[in-house]
Image (cartoon, rainbow, N blue to C red; front, top):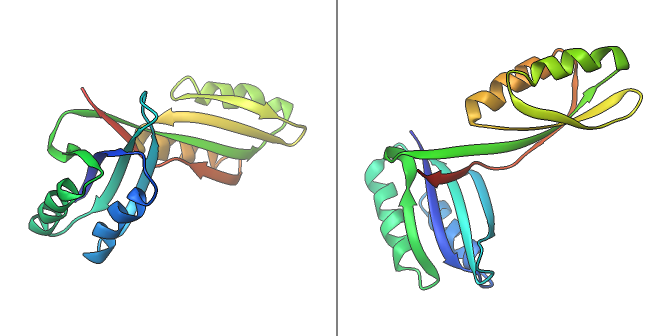
Length: 157
């Protein structure tokens, strides 16, 4: 089962390495990691997605995260109500006759063309993982040349 965990930390050198180290030391691969400052530049918000087969080991990781000096709070969103989103930038094949088809896709998804040249368009889209997956399937029809996406971001509601 995938777990989405948020960690509010003091924005100090080495904190990211210590937090990531707790997961890797127990054999967990971090599937997604997003980190950024909060409104307070001395505090950062981490959203971590891990696949955990053994819930008890993950519970221990959460407890150990709480013991780290620079950690303020730890929240496992897996069983809590939350909103999550990812951002994706995709470079796709493009011609002027494709513009209407691409814009029609964005009637179903939150996205837009943010740049285009004669044969390439860069698409920006935001959504949950299922929405992003469905969008990428639609964009495959145009030919995706390059793809970059953020890790999952999550916030309680």
